[in-house]
Image 1 (cartoon, rainbow, N blue to C red):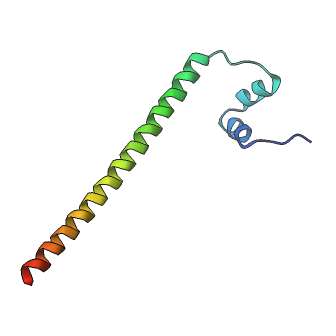
Image 2 (image 1 turned 180 degrees about the vertical axis):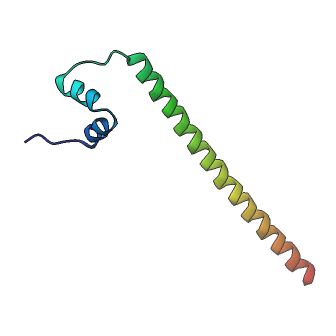
Image 3 (image 1 turned 90 degrees about the horizontal axis):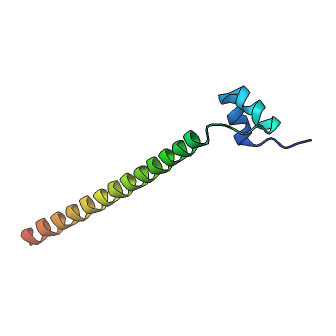
Length: 78
């Protein structure tokens, strides 16, 4: 019995005809569009990662500012 991969299930759910062609070994004709789509997803993933890192840096800077404010107010009271 052949093992079914998750990517095969995804292909089948998206387009049964594409899955059938893939099973028959028929090559896709839109390689350029597929490559462009993969590049778009790659760029999007990098943008998401970059924005996540910027957000983490923002939270870290906010935490540092609050600590400095607490230290400053504590030293004024003493």
